[in-house]
Length: 345
Image (cartoon, rainbow, N blue to C red; front, side):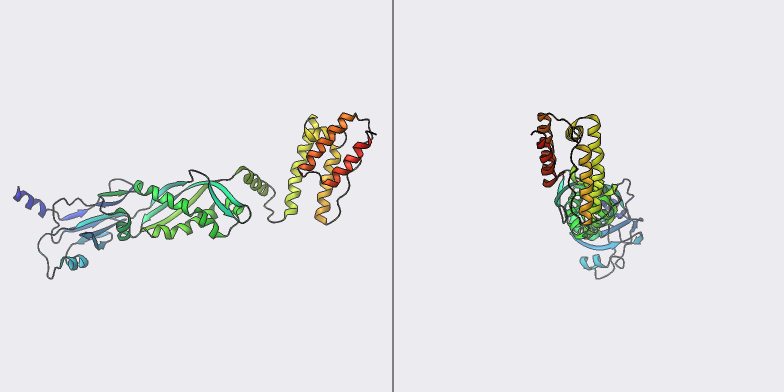
């Protein structure tokens, strides 16, 4: 048995990793109790790096190519082993291979809505997801900080850590970008670039290089999504709030008219008494006057038609609700109230 063990040791003359599957980042060459022959060949394929580790200390690092292992090609290991002359006998050392290929289509996402701060809206809760790609850029650092002495270390082993880094840095990425939240949410490329800028140094701390980052979807709270849809629909008018309100009013008036056509709803009841058309005119004229700096016109008088007392009271209640919602001003409400109450005399 001792003779067979001796013979087996002498045949470790080629060290290589064929990388027969995807998703492996680090792989230790199976040494068992065998030794490496003097002058053995180390084969490092494209997109691989190999490192020699002596008693837990990283020694020599080899890039792609075929390397003959001698004291000249192993200077650090030679120093650690105290080889003061050319070694002629086999030696022991741990050899680790690292894949430096891109690891693509790595998923990230927010399992729960996260809260971010925005200068326009204050605290905002959002969901987002996308993907990213990375590679091992510093095998020595990755070995020391992450993979260690394990026989094999894969992408799946690192997935949770990297997802956590992405989620942890979303808020910082948005804050450091200085971009208003609505612009960020409507431009996913800018969002992805801001996130990549924030994450690059975090990946580098563990020997990784972030090669790509995408944001495929951003889900906003319903009220903010409506604002974003309105802003896009009006041609992205920016900070011109006058035009923004004109756009909102133009959207609102057809809804009043639709209610009138069916005879139902608040606007439908008011228009049924001759006040609905006047209400639309007051809204449009009052908005125009406000934008031009003029005084708001008074509401036109309702047509002089016979109205039952209960209908007048019902209309007052409806107009009161419009005033509460900010559709009618106090002045407009008072004018309409006075006109309707005269019909009760």
